[in-house]
Image (tube, rainbow, N blue to C red; front, side, top):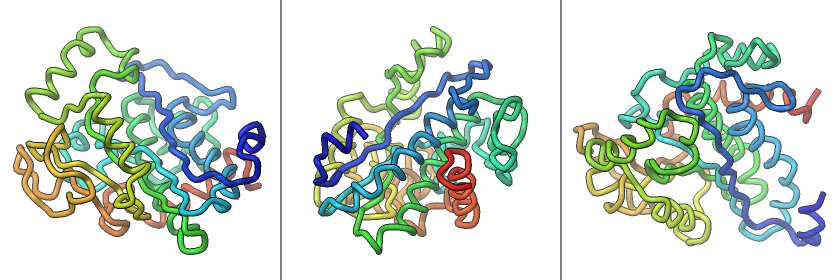
Length: 273
């Protein structure tokens, strides 16, 4: 309500869904005030509810954009090395969501709690949300829905709950081994491109930068030009490239589950009975 007052009825031209919590390997089960596992609540359900509540405002704006941040761990095409590190994202049959996601149910697939997997699952949901928003609203409204992986931002507060030795070694590992490291400034520049540049007004797209070593780090092709399947430093062909709607694969490319995820999310945030 306060945001709508500030908008003054003029519509909302840009919405970036970038809230995120991770907690690394911490095995503590954290819950939102509504009783949902915290990673799911913040990283997916919060975004889902916010976008839906502001949809009418986005419709009023000319050439509006809605951008939902993704991550390499969402395994959108099964090629990136980061998506192959256990535990792998796996939404299963969404049985946890169907059962209401109230403690002791804390995983989307209804399985045993795993904090690292819970984070990855929630980010898969974000890409599925972007695809479903595009299918439901783009043709009717002209709103451009997209997602992006801005690179491995290894020095952010997302890792503040992780072991101190991890926080020390993680940036160096991605600078020198995976070569996927990007600074916060570079990641911000990439997001700003998707926010404002006319070449990034595509809908249903998942933007990814090449990096000098082909692993999404600094340098290399800009996302708008990074569409060809090339080998990265680890000889994974087709990794870290910009994907159109139907190129998005893995868990996030499952249309039937994306539709089911939408319907179950509606119920959980009480947008549907």
